[in-house]
Length: 437
Ligand code: SF4
Image 1 (spheres, rainbow, N blue to C red):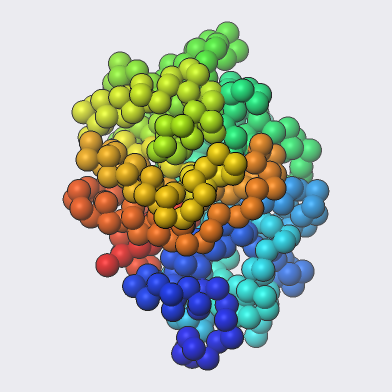
Image 2 (cartoon, rainbow, N blue to C red; image 1 turned 45 degrees about the horizontal axis):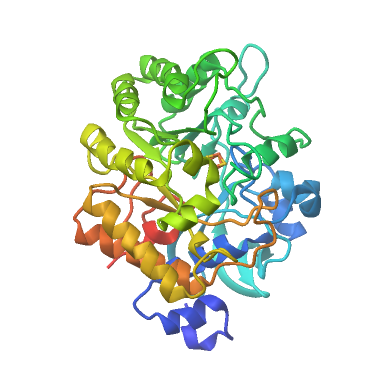
């Protein structure tokens, strides 16, 4: 390891000097989540055959597929781990956000993949390998990974309904590209998840059983995360709400694997009777994503949620859900950084942070443990082209989340792996899980 002050001035170094109490893993992770990264030709060649981007829900990239080109779009890894290197980073799991404009590039240096910022090597990159069951097929030839991709080596991620009934400018969340992306995905080739709007229940049950039989510590499934776009009308003549739609999947999964693993269910806000029904079917956690704390911003950036449920009812349902699910088992997502969306959001880091902290405090005082996902400015969303959120906000919001979490003595939010200790987190969408004392 060489000392920090011998490096020129990569961002992680200057910010590590500015925030001496914050681990460099948190700084670097947030910066690559907000700015994305790219891969050199050599690095892509090195990565050939790794567990590549599955495009299981949103694009989760900054550059569109056409700009990335087919190689980067289809061969780049889904997620990576950063470890060691000049700053001796503890192992840090990070979702790969692709951007051709990013200063961050994975390149091969000394025979190893390294993450560089403006050509300055920062840390080694561990590429994800495919688990043994990838490539196995169902009777109709569908590959297992096209039904359920593995994320972060340990998360089975099931998108049961991969479009959203919140439709158009007046309803879709402004940061979200779900409906655009499913159209894009149908143009792509690669090891991607099948772009079916509705996932087949029998296929899901068969694949999840095979995945959970894998006991190698490198690929052991530790959680099942289920999500879908919002449902406000009948899907194929059947269920007209997210609970009724998803319960048959939950029952089919539980009948195959029993109760060993948590099932995280992400839907739009549900009345308490439906949360109870989901609980009875076997979910471990219900997360109705609030996205942003400030009421005015919620109504602007999540107009469908405001229209069909409303801010006050959303909060009421979250608080009521804790009595059914238990503390740690109600964990709505907050899109970290969208507080500063322009022209509507807070103009300064201090104001945005005050609002975010107020949200963490209020939610946690009710036993709700929100989780953060760093805002990825997706090309198919209505906020395409928005400038990146200041890094200071993302780092300080992570710390504010952690401080509130410790203050209220809450458990980790279930189903996202370990957190709160440097170098142990699996979740790669936010560095809030990497903050520690
Ligand atoms: S509810 Fe909002 S964030 Fe969720 S899928 Fe629909 S548009 Fe996207």
